[in-house]
Image (cartoon, rainbow, N blue to C red):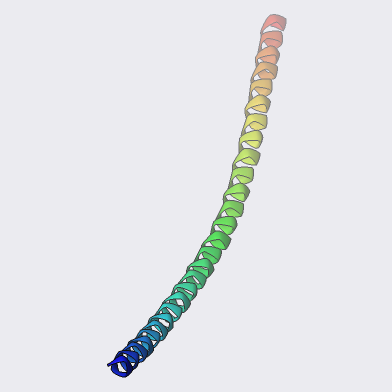
Length: 98
């Protein structure tokens, strides 16, 4: 009887080892697939980050262009006011001479 218990215990032990090895294999495969997925996500995030950086640079270029045009517009407005004042003073001086 003792011999059959030992055989049973050895058999159970082997079954447990096989089961654990199988589980370890699946866990390792699962870990590998999770790592691969994480790497793919990381690559996707990297591409997305690069795209965001590029878009931000484009936005900064557009903002600079808008600010330059605003300054130019302000300069033209100031020149227009100066010319209006100058013409107004010429008209007044010509009117006074008559």
